[in-house]
Amino acid sequence: MQPFFKAFLDLMLPSFCLACDKPLGSAPDLLFCPDCLEKLCFIQSPLCPCCGRVYLVATGGDHHCGTCLTTPRHFTRARALFLYEELLKKVVHRFKYQGKTDCLPSFARFARNLPQLTETKKIDLIVPVPLHQSRLRERGFNQALLLARAFFPKDQRIIPNLLIRSRPTAPQTGFSGAARRTNLKNAFAVINPHRLTGKKILLVDDVFTTGTTVNECAKVLKKAGAIEVIVLTLARVTEDY
Ligand SMILES: [Zn+2]
Ligand SMILES: [Zn+2]
Image (cartoon, rainbow, N blue to C red; front, side, top):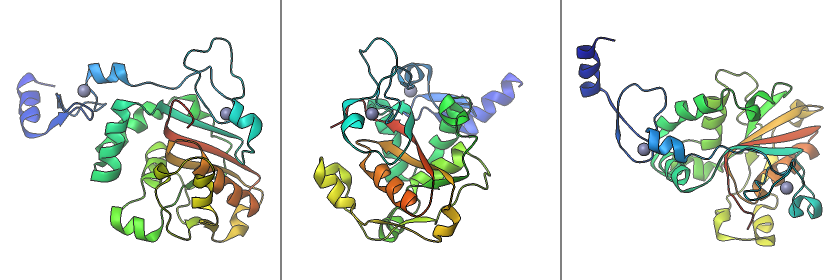
């Protein structure tokens, strides 16, 4: 690109880092400055092969975590792209609560060649974790559906209204342990269960915290006929709590 033309574009269409608002010049491929890029924590082994819990100080290979050994999981495995740390929290917050969806193309680019996505080739259907109608009206979009569409562009396997949240629920962040499960009891339902019979499902959500939400969704999907549920989230907390 001619320097003059690039300078003109920078002036007309400036881009800023999603995390620190530093100017980036025109149309960069990733909306993160080099400093913030370095702080993004991509998830890698060693982790729990079931829930994807990351062992930050552990040495050796993948091994099941205490929670997965003692708590039944209805999903086969859960994987996330990033640790849900300070920088990513800020970007996810902008996205979910301020409706700033400009992070999606960058996330999609990061995800393209990661094993978490390439492992999903044998999936039959992609189902986003649903919001209740009242929350959807308030927010205007379902972040899980937008993430699914960003990760799998134009993919016909994405079925937005197969799994629904049949009653409003309080945010899970206000609860811990058993109260999280009670809060979500009978909160999800399947429309057209025949579409699920014998199918392998990829369930998509924004953040994996304790896994209660995706576990409850997986339980409902399997009860309705799905043979397997795998979970993919943008981010995962570092520790269970
Ligand atoms: Zn930055
Ligand atoms: Zn685990």
